[in-house]
Image (cartoon, rainbow, N blue to C red):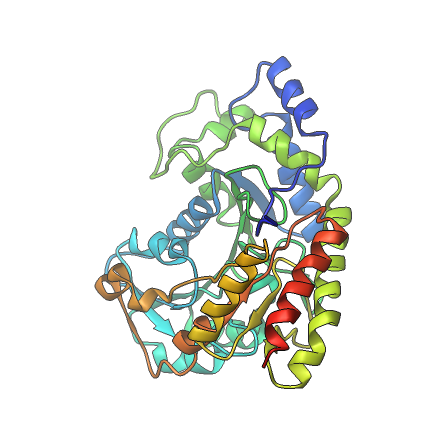
Length: 377
């Protein structure tokens, strides 16, 4: 079976983990954590980058740093993972889901203003498949209404919008280094802070509400509990695993793009014939080949396609069930406006196997099996 995903592995990971163990520093903020933080800051031009235990915890930190409180409202797409929503629900916010654009599966920026009320605190664009939302428009709306922008860039590491790294455009950006992402530490993430003001607070939140980071920099004689926080700091062994991949980030990125381009060339004739729809990359957006998806005619067509691929030894998967239709979505939020695309487009989308180091023969098997299905009519 050609699996949908394989966690990235370079080969240097075990050696770096051993170094972390030998240094007797396997908890957080060891040398590898610091290397990863510095790499993210320097590579993407972030004011501050801090590794976290997950993309979810990065979002939770961002929600707290945004000042979201009980009774506030947050605007986000329904087509996203639950973490995007739960981070703000945990602060007591009410969720306002808006429809997506069918071309990118990102939130429709033209629908944001209609969802704004006096209670609105933040906008949360989700860069689906590593393709940027229309951030210029979103930032303009945010400035006009004095709203915080939190980028859910879980899938967007190495992607850009008009030359700027995803995660560095809004007030806060959140990455995921889960095993399903382009770069992985098993479970992990990072929060990026754009402005200087919130950086120290972010460190406090990440260190269980203490000023421990200031203590280690020699800024205070002892550290103490000063604010809200949680255990958002990952083990240095996990950072060591990630560091092996960040060292070769460009190689991983290009390898994934090679697979993406192979798929794209194979399926473009079907798209031109109207049998399927393919991902759209808007002008000014550079993506990271986080995924390759096609859109079938409808839910029944997708179900038949997934079954066909499984019978041919290929694992393909659909993606999110829209949050506004989930039990928690009904409890904590509401859909604003018409669900014109969110549900219908989510029912068509299917993801093909995509991972670093994919065997060219396996890529060809995926294409052959898919073409066998789609060319039947």
